[in-house]
Length: 124
Image 1: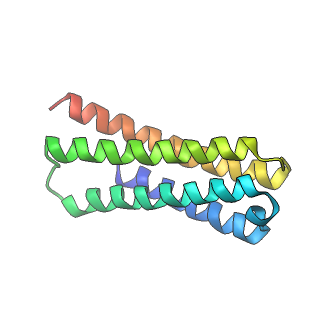
Image 2: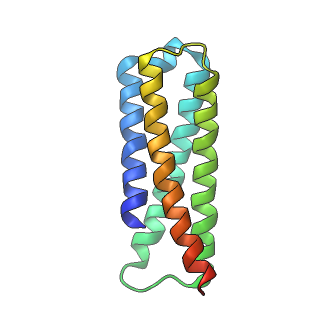
């Protein structure tokens, strides 16, 4: 779980650096809005990661798992909104496609983390 959330967070940070480096938000307004939503997802993932790390060695309770599930689901929703915004961007060059791929990889990591949480909650 920790690793999946961490990889997702790193992927989003890399996407943000890439977008800033290529000035993608300045080129296209929809992309700029998508990056804002992606930053929100990044903060939400960071919150989920802190929840997992705060628990340390002891297992999370059912209530904590359910809370984690809600947080990861919210992050995934925000990230998918950002992906949809990129899909609507007027610019569709290679840089925009690469940024979209980075978002997709982060989304896949969140999806895997959510599956784990669902399994744990179902088994409690």
